[in-house]
Image 1: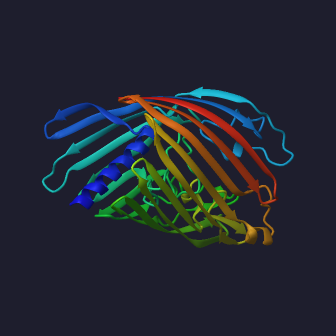
Image 2: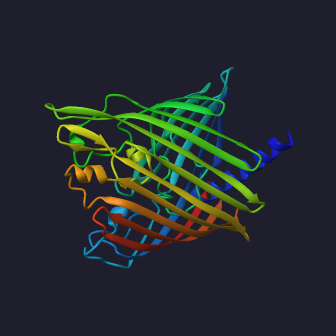
Image 3: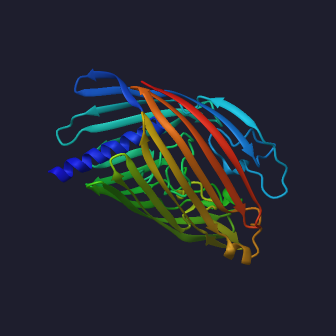
Length: 383
């Protein structure tokens, strides 16, 4: 019983820390309609950024959230010193709960304003869950937040198992979760080296995850199996893709938490957060899968009314076979890395402040590299 209570306290503390960083919504308005209870939640968030370094002149800094494509490399022209402010991460959602006699029927519809490049309302979550069956759009099942370090930057750590949202049908039994996910979803990878118009999606992606904890440790592991294919009307081919991840966190002291996660695979594509490579490339009439891997490690330390968080994350792709086959991949990214250091604090309930320094770097197959710094401040008001 004591071990269970300790685990619950640690999980609660971990979730509180993550909530503080990404400003997960706090329920504000509760409505009862018959047996159904509904809550409206969300927050308003201001982000202010200043970027310096090897930044492409055609971009206005590193982007709304850190974008590696905005980094200039090698002899490319650069433009340093970009300031911006926006409120596009602000969020609005509705959650309902209805008892059915077997288990509660839960529905969630949530959106933010990151659509259309910034300012447009976009759908984040739209799903229902009942009796272990979840259907709709939500976080991909191939991923976990147990290894995440809180950041102000919306990109978060790279090299993690997919943290995007896509349509899926999921079944959960205790700590085990299995899902069939949309092959054309957000994390499937946009193209095969420019052959996006020939992409073929014939089968859903299969994802599995086990997530649990004991004492001061929380852990998760997952697997991915998918098909990547193309068909241009005259030629077609397919390859099998797969991925694995393992991660966890441990409270090493009352106010200190260590977190880490490693992920990788062949044909994993966008299921690796901010992967430098798509799932596959065309070699004549053949489709060849690309391997990629990455991970993150960090520490959170409570200091005063808030916490100091330091995270290092990395993502890499193996282009050797594509280069040997004659594919023009010299300008493709071979490795990316990202460092976050921040202090996050809450002066009052539902109010969060933060300041963060981030360093971003990328290196191409040809050996060209570029890097930049971002200073960011954020204010979040939950409702």
